[in-house]
Length: 149
Image (cartoon, rainbow, N blue to C red; front, top):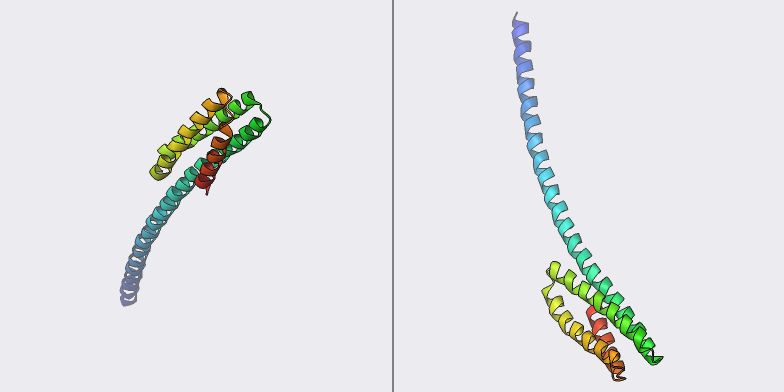
């Protein structure tokens, strides 16, 4: 009978020890999981910000491409095609402005507004077949290059 009580006491001690060690492992596991959640959410937020910046740059590159095509059209004295290209460039710049507003990129937004205004003026000059639009287009190219870099 003494052996049975000793065995029962030993089993109780081992059970209690196992329960104690098991519950401590659960707490550390929960802490580890919460830490991983925080890391994943912060990385996810930073990736979303990078994607927003990349989308703005992509639209700026497309706008620049259409401005360059408009310049080529002006050299060929094709004012209609140049106006269409500037119109598409204006749309791309508008999309970039909208993305900058949504992405909370205020400094970029303030730099985009004058370029959009200059693009409208240039498009109006092309519509009136004014050859001084070539110099304005060159200025637009430089401004877009600075925005992209």
